[in-house]
Each structure stands twice: as C-alpha cells, then as structure tokens.
Length: 112
Length: 116
Image (cartoon, rainbow over all chains, first blue to last red; front, side, top):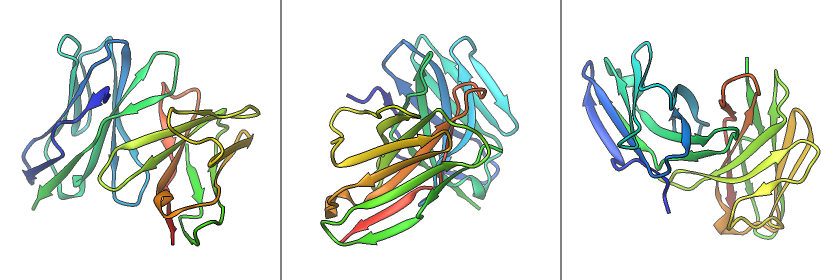
C-alpha cells in the first residue's frame, strides 16, 4: 500500500513558467515532508521541507504548500529553468524517526 | 558540508559472487545510515536502517542474509550483496542522518550494480 503517492509520473513545462508537482499521502501521522530532486544515476539532493505545523515554506524559486486536511502537498517552481529537469520525489516522515517514505516520483521536463 | 560518498560508483560482477558497497559520511558523524534500492522508473525503496554498533533493521521483504549491512563506525556503513544474481542488478543508494539538521538525510551518489 503506497502511503505517499505522486500521481503524475511526468510533467512538461515551458521555461519561465510555473511547475507544480503534487504529492498525496494517506497517513495523518506524518508530520514532516521533504522534496528531493534526482538526476539519473545520482543520489537525491534535498530541495525544501515543511513541518506539519506550517502550510507554506519558501526558498528562492521553490515553494512547498501543505494542505493537511486534504493530505496533499505541492512543490511550485517559479520560474522553471531547463536545469530543473529531473525526477522529483516527495517524502514523508513520522515524528522522532528518520525513516522516509518516498513517493513514486514525477519526472519534470522544462522545455527551452 | 554534509557530504556522503559511496564506493564503488558502479560494479559489474558474475552471478554467485558477493559485492560490497561502502557508504561514508565525510565531514560528519552519522549514528544512523539508510540503504535504498531504486529500480528503473521506480521510487526509492528503503531496504534497511543501519545503526552504528548494532544490528541493522530490515524492511519487510528484504532478505537480511542476502543483503548484509555492517555499520562499524560513525562514518562508515557497508552493504554486501551476497551470492548476487541478475535480479539484484539495481541502483543502490545510501543516506546518513546528521542529528542537527531537522530530519534531513544526506544521500550518497549511488552505486550501479550489474550482475551478469
């Protein structure tokens, strides 16, 4: 049973426009969420995170929104750049552990 | 800071042999390290949690006798794939937690294992 889901396996966006990547989770006990970016044959790199006590966190071009009632979070990238093309994973954590539950990933392609 | 390395970055071996993959935290001490496996076009699957000085905790469905994990020091964890078979071919990634970073794990660059 997939506790963290990314229902869009792929997304194409024009350079300069907004990229919105979505993530849904089923367990209301998750209280910390992270987004990672991954290039082929490389390890994931951390992008941004959000605690369940917040509904928004912003870092430069990246903003993560959390809607706890809907058990949904999203990553906004504005403006999108060709270098943003990668696979994006969301991850959820239970408080007090470091055990990540990863989503299935969304491949973002930013078109020049 | 917070660099995690893996060695080797890729390895090709014959079926039936064992392969050891090392994961090192280069500039911090990691009491807990994690091993993941990624199949093509699939998510990162947590295999086990490795704690320094104690036995690893394996996820359901992961054979502990097949994937031997040793966390001998605060900066080194090893994953040994024993009697490797072609179905063990995958991309293996480790990560380390640095306790002061708000639940963040730092990932290694991964190891591509191909079993012939």
